[in-house]
Length: 171
Image 1: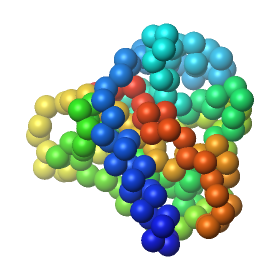
Image 2 (image 1 turned 90 degrees about the horizontal axis):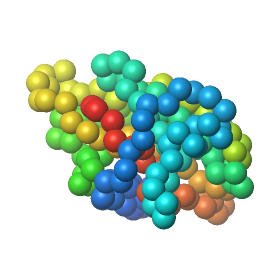
Image 3 (image 1 turned 45 degrees about the vertical axis):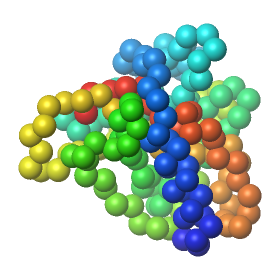
């Protein structure tokens, strides 16, 4: 990973975890994109994230990414692995979070077509020795853009940070 791309990813990630909390939605069944957007609606005037998450087990989450009607989303990954994060509503990371490393490579970009949804099952565990109580967090996916990652230094258009983090979920 070159230095400018690494710097860009760190700036995006810092912005994502520093965002204040917003209204969360109810757990979604995975359905058509229009149904997903309707069920994840937030109050008028508020920014809506492209991610909606629900807890499906200990450390397991179902995350639905819904592309806007007029834009395709491109998800950066390494051979299918994506770097998912958890972020506190007040910003920063929980001290008991144990990130799962992802190789530094650029695999074929995953795509969510305009107006469509794609579901991911994500494992976001804690450290094995953690006995702290559950807390509310956002699930964050940096590396989403509205133009494909064709290799650098080719341009891409990252999405706004507030659209790359989910509703609050228990973690």
